[in-house]
Length: 108
Image (cartoon, rainbow, N blue to C red; front, side, top):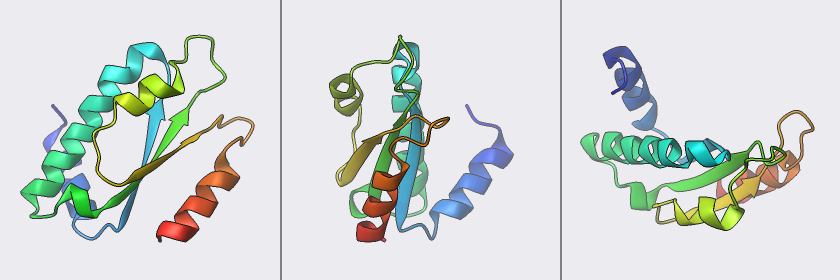
C-alpha cells in the first residue's frame, strides 16, 4: 500500500489529467509490480469519479537494453487499459523519446 500522502497527491493529480504516461520497468521481475501500479491508478481514478476508459495512456517500456528485459509482447499483455499506446525506451541513450513526443502531440 502507498503512504497516505502519496495516494492523496496522486489523486489530486489524477483529478485533471488528460493523458497518463506510465514508465514501466521492462525487467521480468518487475512485470507484476507494473501491473499492480496500473491497477492502483485505475482504482484512484474510479474513486475520483473518472473512468480510466476515457483517458489515453502511453506506456514507456524502459530499460529495454537490459539482458533480463521481458519481451515487448509480454509487457503489452500485462496492460489492462482501454486506450493506450506503447514505446520502448532506453533512458540513458534517449532511444524512443522522439516517438513518445509524436504520440503525445497526437493525443494531447
